[in-house]
Image (cartoon, rainbow, N blue to C red; front, side):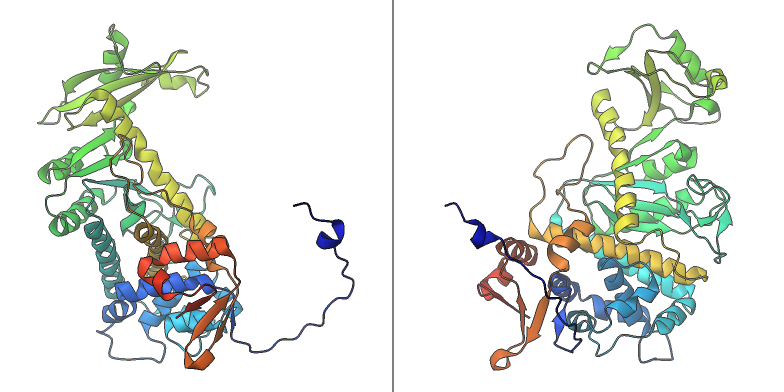
Length: 466
Protein backbone atom coordinates (compact mmCIF):
# COMPACT_ATOMS: atom_id res chain seq x y z
CA UNK A 1 0.00 0.00 0.00
CA UNK A 2 1.42 3.35 -1.04
CA UNK A 3 1.40 6.13 1.56
CA UNK A 4 0.65 9.77 0.78
CA UNK A 5 3.02 12.62 1.53
CA UNK A 6 0.72 13.90 4.26
CA UNK A 7 1.02 10.54 6.03
CA UNK A 8 4.83 10.68 5.98
CA UNK A 9 5.99 14.28 6.06
CA UNK A 10 5.56 16.69 8.98
CA UNK A 11 6.79 20.16 9.87
CA UNK A 12 8.37 20.91 13.21
CA UNK A 13 9.45 24.43 14.16
CA UNK A 14 9.26 24.85 17.92
CA UNK A 15 12.33 23.84 19.95
CA UNK A 16 11.21 22.10 23.17
CA UNK A 17 12.16 23.37 26.60
CA UNK A 18 14.78 21.23 28.35
CA UNK A 19 14.05 19.95 31.87
CA UNK A 20 16.16 17.59 33.98
CA UNK A 21 14.26 15.41 36.45
CA UNK A 22 14.85 12.14 38.25
CA UNK A 23 12.51 9.86 36.29
CA UNK A 24 14.24 6.47 36.80
CA UNK A 25 15.30 6.53 33.16
CA UNK A 26 18.18 4.37 32.00
CA UNK A 27 20.29 4.70 28.87
CA UNK A 28 21.55 1.12 29.11
CA UNK A 29 18.53 -1.17 29.24
CA UNK A 30 20.51 -3.92 27.52
CA UNK A 31 22.71 -4.25 30.62
CA UNK A 32 19.98 -6.61 31.76
CA UNK A 33 21.70 -9.44 29.87
CA UNK A 34 24.95 -8.84 31.75
CA UNK A 35 23.11 -8.69 35.09
CA UNK A 36 21.82 -12.20 34.41
CA UNK A 37 25.33 -13.31 33.41
CA UNK A 38 26.89 -11.86 36.58
CA UNK A 39 24.34 -13.75 38.68
CA UNK A 40 25.01 -16.96 36.78
CA UNK A 41 28.78 -16.61 37.36
CA UNK A 42 28.36 -15.38 40.96
CA UNK A 43 30.89 -12.77 39.90
CA UNK A 44 30.40 -10.24 42.68
CA UNK A 45 30.91 -12.74 45.51
CA UNK A 46 33.93 -14.32 43.83
CA UNK A 47 35.54 -10.92 43.30
CA UNK A 48 34.94 -10.09 46.96
CA UNK A 49 36.77 -13.27 47.92
CA UNK A 50 39.87 -12.04 46.03
CA UNK A 51 40.17 -9.19 48.54
CA UNK A 52 39.06 -11.03 51.69
CA UNK A 53 42.61 -10.89 53.11
CA UNK A 54 42.43 -7.10 53.57
CA UNK A 55 41.94 -6.04 57.18
CA UNK A 56 40.49 -2.64 56.29
CA UNK A 57 37.00 -2.76 54.77
CA UNK A 58 36.13 0.55 53.07
CA UNK A 59 32.59 1.46 52.08
CA UNK A 60 33.42 0.90 48.44
CA UNK A 61 35.34 -2.37 48.63
CA UNK A 62 38.04 -3.25 46.12
CA UNK A 63 35.76 -5.85 44.55
CA UNK A 64 33.16 -3.14 43.84
CA UNK A 65 35.81 -0.98 42.19
CA UNK A 66 36.89 -3.88 39.97
CA UNK A 67 33.29 -4.70 39.08
CA UNK A 68 32.63 -1.02 38.31
CA UNK A 69 35.63 -0.95 35.96
CA UNK A 70 34.34 -4.03 34.12
CA UNK A 71 30.92 -2.40 33.65
CA UNK A 72 32.62 0.90 32.73
CA UNK A 73 34.48 -0.81 29.89
CA UNK A 74 31.46 -2.84 28.79
CA UNK A 75 29.57 0.44 28.33
CA UNK A 76 32.31 1.72 26.02
CA UNK A 77 33.96 4.30 28.28
CA UNK A 78 37.74 4.47 28.55
CA UNK A 79 38.72 7.27 30.93
CA UNK A 80 37.92 7.06 34.65
CA UNK A 81 36.55 10.62 34.57
CA UNK A 82 33.69 9.40 32.36
CA UNK A 83 32.09 7.60 35.31
CA UNK A 84 30.33 10.92 36.01
CA UNK A 85 28.25 10.55 32.83
CA UNK A 86 26.24 7.56 34.10
CA UNK A 87 26.53 7.75 37.86
CA UNK A 88 22.76 8.28 38.22
CA UNK A 89 21.74 5.46 35.85
CA UNK A 90 19.42 3.17 37.86
CA UNK A 91 20.24 -0.02 35.93
CA UNK A 92 23.99 0.46 36.39
CA UNK A 93 23.40 0.96 40.13
CA UNK A 94 21.28 -2.20 40.32
CA UNK A 95 23.90 -4.18 38.41
CA UNK A 96 26.56 -3.16 40.93
CA UNK A 97 24.28 -3.41 43.98
CA UNK A 98 24.84 0.23 44.98
CA UNK A 99 22.75 3.28 45.77
CA UNK A 100 25.46 5.63 44.51
CA UNK A 101 28.68 5.22 42.56
CA UNK A 102 32.07 6.07 44.09
CA UNK A 103 33.80 9.30 43.11
CA UNK A 104 36.46 9.15 40.43
CA UNK A 105 39.09 9.98 43.04
CA UNK A 106 37.96 6.96 45.10
CA UNK A 107 38.35 4.63 42.11
CA UNK A 108 41.76 6.10 41.24
CA UNK A 109 42.95 5.81 44.83
CA UNK A 110 41.78 2.19 45.07
CA UNK A 111 43.71 1.32 41.90
CA UNK A 112 46.86 2.99 43.19
CA UNK A 113 46.64 0.94 46.42
CA UNK A 114 46.39 -2.45 44.69
CA UNK A 115 49.05 -5.01 45.58
CA UNK A 116 50.64 -7.88 43.65
CA UNK A 117 48.83 -10.46 45.79
CA UNK A 118 45.47 -9.01 44.78
CA UNK A 119 46.47 -8.93 41.11
CA UNK A 120 47.35 -12.63 41.26
CA UNK A 121 44.02 -13.52 42.88
CA UNK A 122 42.00 -11.57 40.31
CA UNK A 123 44.01 -13.20 37.50
CA UNK A 124 43.33 -16.67 38.94
CA UNK A 125 39.62 -15.85 39.06
CA UNK A 126 39.81 -14.59 35.48
CA UNK A 127 41.32 -17.91 34.32
CA UNK A 128 38.75 -19.89 36.32
CA UNK A 129 35.87 -18.13 34.56
CA UNK A 130 37.34 -18.99 31.16
CA UNK A 131 37.89 -22.63 32.15
CA UNK A 132 34.28 -22.93 33.37
CA UNK A 133 33.02 -21.76 29.99
CA UNK A 134 35.29 -24.19 28.15
CA UNK A 135 34.17 -27.06 30.38
CA UNK A 136 30.53 -26.20 29.70
CA UNK A 137 30.96 -26.20 25.91
CA UNK A 138 32.79 -29.58 25.68
CA UNK A 139 34.89 -28.51 22.69
CA UNK A 140 36.69 -31.42 20.96
CA UNK A 141 40.08 -29.63 21.02
CA UNK A 142 41.53 -26.35 22.21
CA UNK A 143 44.09 -24.10 20.53
CA UNK A 144 46.07 -21.72 22.73
CA UNK A 145 47.95 -18.97 20.89
CA UNK A 146 50.70 -16.86 22.45
CA UNK A 147 51.88 -13.41 21.42
CA UNK A 148 52.78 -10.02 22.87
CA UNK A 149 51.10 -6.67 22.26
CA UNK A 150 52.33 -3.15 22.96
CA UNK A 151 50.39 -0.95 25.43
CA UNK A 152 51.68 2.60 25.08
CA UNK A 153 51.48 5.34 27.69
CA UNK A 154 52.06 9.07 27.24
CA UNK A 155 53.11 9.48 30.87
CA UNK A 156 55.74 7.85 33.06
CA UNK A 157 53.93 4.87 34.58
CA UNK A 158 55.58 2.41 36.95
CA UNK A 159 57.04 -0.60 35.16
CA UNK A 160 57.03 0.93 31.67
CA UNK A 161 60.16 1.17 29.51
CA UNK A 162 61.22 2.37 26.07
CA UNK A 163 61.32 -0.53 23.66
CA UNK A 164 59.76 -1.83 20.47
CA UNK A 165 56.86 0.44 19.62
CA UNK A 166 55.70 0.45 16.03
CA UNK A 167 53.12 3.22 16.38
CA UNK A 168 54.94 5.58 18.72
CA UNK A 169 58.69 5.17 18.47
CA UNK A 170 60.53 6.14 21.62
CA UNK A 171 57.38 6.01 23.73
CA UNK A 172 57.25 4.22 27.08
CA UNK A 173 55.10 1.11 27.12
CA UNK A 174 54.21 -2.25 28.58
CA UNK A 175 54.66 -5.38 26.48
CA UNK A 176 52.43 -8.07 28.06
CA UNK A 177 52.40 -11.61 26.73
CA UNK A 178 48.85 -12.86 26.12
CA UNK A 179 47.44 -16.35 25.87
CA UNK A 180 44.20 -16.59 23.87
CA UNK A 181 41.79 -19.42 23.06
CA UNK A 182 41.18 -19.61 19.30
CA UNK A 183 37.85 -21.50 19.54
CA UNK A 184 36.18 -18.96 21.84
CA UNK A 185 38.11 -15.83 20.79
CA UNK A 186 38.78 -15.11 24.49
CA UNK A 187 41.80 -14.23 26.58
CA UNK A 188 43.02 -17.05 28.82
CA UNK A 189 45.87 -15.43 30.77
CA UNK A 190 48.45 -12.63 30.65
CA UNK A 191 52.08 -12.20 31.68
CA UNK A 192 52.74 -8.51 32.34
CA UNK A 193 56.15 -7.17 31.23
CA UNK A 194 57.88 -3.82 30.61
CA UNK A 195 58.20 -2.57 27.05
CA UNK A 196 61.94 -3.21 26.60
CA UNK A 197 61.93 -7.03 26.62
CA UNK A 198 62.05 -9.57 23.80
CA UNK A 199 58.80 -11.22 22.80
CA UNK A 200 59.91 -14.55 24.29
CA UNK A 201 60.92 -13.09 27.68
CA UNK A 202 59.36 -15.28 30.38
CA UNK A 203 57.50 -17.30 27.73
CA UNK A 204 58.50 -20.86 28.78
CA UNK A 205 57.34 -20.42 32.37
CA UNK A 206 54.17 -18.59 31.30
CA UNK A 207 53.27 -21.23 28.70
CA UNK A 208 53.93 -23.99 31.22
CA UNK A 209 51.58 -22.32 33.70
CA UNK A 210 48.82 -21.86 31.10
CA UNK A 211 48.87 -25.48 29.94
CA UNK A 212 49.05 -26.78 33.50
CA UNK A 213 45.92 -24.79 34.42
CA UNK A 214 44.03 -25.86 31.32
CA UNK A 215 45.00 -29.53 31.34
CA UNK A 216 44.32 -29.98 35.06
CA UNK A 217 40.78 -28.66 34.62
CA UNK A 218 40.01 -30.01 31.12
CA UNK A 219 41.27 -33.56 31.24
CA UNK A 220 41.30 -35.72 28.07
CA UNK A 221 41.07 -32.62 25.87
CA UNK A 222 43.69 -32.41 23.06
CA UNK A 223 45.63 -29.13 23.10
CA UNK A 224 47.37 -27.28 20.26
CA UNK A 225 49.46 -24.13 20.11
CA UNK A 226 50.80 -21.69 17.51
CA UNK A 227 53.62 -19.18 17.94
CA UNK A 228 55.68 -16.89 15.71
CA UNK A 229 59.42 -16.90 15.10
CA UNK A 230 60.17 -14.95 18.29
CA UNK A 231 59.28 -18.10 20.25
CA UNK A 232 61.55 -20.40 18.24
CA UNK A 233 63.45 -21.87 21.16
CA UNK A 234 64.41 -25.38 22.25
CA UNK A 235 63.19 -24.79 25.81
CA UNK A 236 59.73 -23.73 24.64
CA UNK A 237 59.38 -26.77 22.39
CA UNK A 238 60.43 -29.04 25.26
CA UNK A 239 57.71 -27.50 27.43
CA UNK A 240 55.08 -28.17 24.75
CA UNK A 241 56.33 -31.69 24.05
CA UNK A 242 56.37 -32.60 27.73
CA UNK A 243 52.67 -31.69 27.97
CA UNK A 244 51.64 -33.52 24.78
CA UNK A 245 50.75 -30.27 23.02
CA UNK A 246 50.72 -30.31 19.21
CA UNK A 247 52.41 -27.10 18.06
CA UNK A 248 53.61 -25.13 15.06
CA UNK A 249 56.15 -22.30 15.05
CA UNK A 250 57.61 -19.99 12.43
CA UNK A 251 61.36 -20.37 11.86
CA UNK A 252 63.62 -17.30 11.65
CA UNK A 253 65.77 -17.53 8.52
CA UNK A 254 68.46 -15.18 9.76
CA UNK A 255 69.46 -17.53 12.59
CA UNK A 256 69.97 -20.57 10.35
CA UNK A 257 71.66 -19.86 6.99
CA UNK A 258 71.53 -23.58 6.22
CA UNK A 259 67.77 -23.33 5.71
CA UNK A 260 68.36 -20.83 2.92
CA UNK A 261 70.72 -23.28 1.23
CA UNK A 262 68.22 -26.13 1.55
CA UNK A 263 65.56 -24.04 -0.19
CA UNK A 264 67.83 -22.84 -2.97
CA UNK A 265 69.08 -26.37 -3.70
CA UNK A 266 65.62 -27.90 -3.71
CA UNK A 267 64.41 -28.92 -7.19
CA UNK A 268 61.14 -30.73 -6.51
CA UNK A 269 58.32 -29.07 -4.58
CA UNK A 270 55.08 -30.89 -3.73
CA UNK A 271 51.88 -29.06 -4.62
CA UNK A 272 49.38 -28.02 -1.93
CA UNK A 273 47.09 -25.90 -4.13
CA UNK A 274 47.40 -23.43 -7.00
CA UNK A 275 49.45 -21.00 -4.84
CA UNK A 276 51.23 -23.08 -2.22
CA UNK A 277 53.82 -25.84 -2.54
CA UNK A 278 56.14 -27.46 -0.02
CA UNK A 279 58.75 -30.00 0.94
CA UNK A 280 59.44 -31.46 4.39
CA UNK A 281 62.56 -32.62 6.20
CA UNK A 282 63.51 -33.86 9.65
CA UNK A 283 66.17 -31.43 10.81
CA UNK A 284 67.63 -29.82 13.90
CA UNK A 285 70.10 -27.04 14.67
CA UNK A 286 73.54 -28.29 15.69
CA UNK A 287 73.06 -27.38 19.35
CA UNK A 288 69.78 -29.34 19.68
CA UNK A 289 69.38 -32.98 20.67
CA UNK A 290 66.04 -33.70 19.04
CA UNK A 291 65.00 -33.50 15.40
CA UNK A 292 61.68 -31.94 14.45
CA UNK A 293 59.60 -31.88 11.30
CA UNK A 294 60.40 -28.76 9.25
CA UNK A 295 57.95 -27.84 6.49
CA UNK A 296 59.38 -25.50 3.84
CA UNK A 297 56.66 -23.63 1.97
CA UNK A 298 56.60 -21.23 -0.92
CA UNK A 299 53.74 -19.13 -2.24
CA UNK A 300 53.38 -17.55 -5.64
CA UNK A 301 53.42 -13.79 -5.49
CA UNK A 302 52.58 -11.23 -8.14
CA UNK A 303 54.13 -8.32 -6.29
CA UNK A 304 57.84 -7.68 -6.34
CA UNK A 305 59.43 -7.55 -2.89
CA UNK A 306 60.81 -4.08 -2.10
CA UNK A 307 62.53 -4.62 1.22
CA UNK A 308 66.19 -3.98 2.09
CA UNK A 309 68.37 -5.66 -0.51
CA UNK A 310 70.84 -7.01 2.01
CA UNK A 311 68.23 -9.44 3.33
CA UNK A 312 69.18 -11.79 0.49
CA UNK A 313 72.21 -12.69 2.59
CA UNK A 314 69.88 -14.53 4.99
CA UNK A 315 66.52 -15.10 3.31
CA UNK A 316 65.86 -16.57 -0.15
CA UNK A 317 64.32 -13.94 -2.42
CA UNK A 318 63.04 -14.05 -5.96
CA UNK A 319 60.30 -12.33 -7.91
CA UNK A 320 58.01 -15.38 -8.15
CA UNK A 321 57.75 -16.83 -4.63
CA UNK A 322 57.67 -15.96 -0.94
CA UNK A 323 59.20 -18.53 1.39
CA UNK A 324 58.38 -19.60 4.94
CA UNK A 325 59.48 -22.46 7.17
CA UNK A 326 57.34 -24.03 9.89
CA UNK A 327 58.54 -26.40 12.59
CA UNK A 328 55.99 -28.78 14.10
CA UNK A 329 55.46 -32.00 15.99
CA UNK A 330 52.16 -32.60 14.19
CA UNK A 331 51.87 -35.72 12.02
CA UNK A 332 49.09 -34.40 9.80
CA UNK A 333 49.44 -33.54 6.13
CA UNK A 334 51.53 -30.52 5.16
CA UNK A 335 48.42 -28.74 3.87
CA UNK A 336 46.66 -29.13 7.25
CA UNK A 337 49.75 -27.93 9.14
CA UNK A 338 50.18 -24.86 6.92
CA UNK A 339 46.50 -23.91 7.18
CA UNK A 340 46.56 -24.45 10.93
CA UNK A 341 49.60 -22.21 11.37
CA UNK A 342 48.25 -19.51 9.06
CA UNK A 343 45.14 -19.29 11.25
CA UNK A 344 47.31 -17.70 13.94
CA UNK A 345 46.38 -14.28 12.55
CA UNK A 346 43.01 -14.52 14.32
CA UNK A 347 44.81 -13.57 17.54
CA UNK A 348 45.56 -10.14 16.13
CA UNK A 349 41.82 -9.65 15.62
CA UNK A 350 41.27 -10.42 19.31
CA UNK A 351 43.84 -7.80 20.29
CA UNK A 352 42.26 -5.27 17.92
CA UNK A 353 38.72 -5.86 19.23
CA UNK A 354 39.84 -5.60 22.85
CA UNK A 355 41.78 -2.38 22.26
CA UNK A 356 38.96 -0.74 20.33
CA UNK A 357 35.99 -1.97 22.37
CA UNK A 358 37.17 -2.56 25.95
CA UNK A 359 40.14 -0.21 26.40
CA UNK A 360 42.87 -2.85 26.55
CA UNK A 361 45.41 -0.24 25.44
CA UNK A 362 44.45 2.27 28.18
CA UNK A 363 47.01 2.97 30.93
CA UNK A 364 44.75 4.17 33.75
CA UNK A 365 47.18 5.00 36.59
CA UNK A 366 50.86 5.49 37.32
CA UNK A 367 51.10 2.41 39.54
CA UNK A 368 52.01 -0.99 38.11
CA UNK A 369 49.50 -3.07 40.09
CA UNK A 370 46.67 -0.65 39.27
CA UNK A 371 47.45 -0.89 35.57
CA UNK A 372 47.58 -4.67 35.79
CA UNK A 373 44.11 -4.71 37.39
CA UNK A 374 42.77 -2.38 34.70
CA UNK A 375 44.20 -4.64 31.97
CA UNK A 376 42.54 -7.67 33.57
CA UNK A 377 39.24 -5.75 33.70
CA UNK A 378 39.54 -4.95 29.98
CA UNK A 379 40.25 -8.61 29.21
CA UNK A 380 37.32 -9.72 31.37
CA UNK A 381 34.96 -7.26 29.67
CA UNK A 382 36.01 -8.67 26.29
CA UNK A 383 35.51 -12.24 27.51
CA UNK A 384 32.07 -11.46 28.95
CA UNK A 385 30.94 -10.09 25.58
CA UNK A 386 31.96 -13.42 24.05
CA UNK A 387 30.37 -15.42 26.88
CA UNK A 388 27.00 -13.77 26.30
CA UNK A 389 27.04 -14.85 22.66
CA UNK A 390 28.31 -18.35 23.45
CA UNK A 391 25.34 -18.91 25.77
CA UNK A 392 22.90 -17.71 23.10
CA UNK A 393 23.80 -20.27 20.43
CA UNK A 394 25.58 -23.65 20.10
CA UNK A 395 29.12 -23.89 18.68
CA UNK A 396 29.95 -25.03 15.18
CA UNK A 397 29.82 -28.85 15.02
CA UNK A 398 33.16 -29.29 13.26
CA UNK A 399 36.62 -27.71 13.52
CA UNK A 400 38.08 -26.09 10.40
CA UNK A 401 41.81 -26.40 9.54
CA UNK A 402 42.60 -22.78 10.50
CA UNK A 403 40.82 -23.21 13.86
CA UNK A 404 38.62 -20.12 13.64
CA UNK A 405 36.20 -19.29 16.43
CA UNK A 406 33.46 -21.88 16.89
CA UNK A 407 30.88 -19.07 17.01
CA UNK A 408 30.20 -16.12 14.71
CA UNK A 409 30.88 -13.34 17.17
CA UNK A 410 29.69 -9.76 16.95
CA UNK A 411 32.02 -7.04 18.18
CA UNK A 412 31.13 -5.59 21.57
CA UNK A 413 30.65 -2.18 19.94
CA UNK A 414 27.95 -3.74 17.75
CA UNK A 415 26.23 -5.23 20.81
CA UNK A 416 26.26 -1.81 22.46
CA UNK A 417 24.57 -0.08 19.54
CA UNK A 418 21.99 -2.83 19.00
CA UNK A 419 21.14 -3.98 22.52
CA UNK A 420 22.94 -2.33 25.46
CA UNK A 421 22.41 1.34 24.64
CA UNK A 422 18.60 1.23 24.64
CA UNK A 423 16.52 3.73 26.60
CA UNK A 424 14.17 2.39 29.25
CA UNK A 425 12.18 3.29 32.37
CA UNK A 426 12.14 1.47 35.71
CA UNK A 427 8.66 1.38 37.28
CA UNK A 428 6.72 -0.71 39.82
CA UNK A 429 3.20 -1.38 38.51
CA UNK A 430 1.31 -3.31 41.20
CA UNK A 431 4.59 -3.59 43.15
CA UNK A 432 6.45 -5.57 40.46
CA UNK A 433 9.73 -4.05 39.31
CA UNK A 434 9.52 -3.60 35.53
CA UNK A 435 11.87 -2.28 32.89
CA UNK A 436 9.84 -0.80 30.04
CA UNK A 437 11.51 -0.37 26.65
CA UNK A 438 10.39 0.75 23.22
CA UNK A 439 8.38 -1.92 21.39
CA UNK A 440 11.03 -2.54 18.72
CA UNK A 441 10.58 -6.16 17.52
CA UNK A 442 14.20 -6.51 16.36
CA UNK A 443 15.61 -5.35 19.70
CA UNK A 444 13.18 -7.57 21.60
CA UNK A 445 14.16 -10.62 19.55
CA UNK A 446 17.89 -10.02 20.07
CA UNK A 447 17.46 -9.33 23.79
CA UNK A 448 15.46 -12.50 24.32
CA UNK A 449 17.96 -14.60 22.37
CA UNK A 450 20.90 -13.26 24.39
CA UNK A 451 19.09 -14.04 27.64
CA UNK A 452 18.08 -17.58 26.72
CA UNK A 453 14.82 -19.51 26.55
CA UNK A 454 13.81 -19.38 30.26
CA UNK A 455 13.93 -15.60 30.16
CA UNK A 456 11.73 -15.48 27.04
CA UNK A 457 8.96 -17.47 28.75
CA UNK A 458 8.83 -14.93 31.60
CA UNK A 459 8.49 -11.86 29.40
CA UNK A 460 5.37 -10.26 28.10
CA UNK A 461 5.03 -8.68 24.68
CA UNK A 462 6.18 -5.21 25.63
CA UNK A 463 7.56 -5.35 29.20
CA UNK A 464 10.75 -6.91 30.48
CA UNK A 465 10.62 -7.82 34.18
CA UNK A 466 13.77 -7.77 36.34
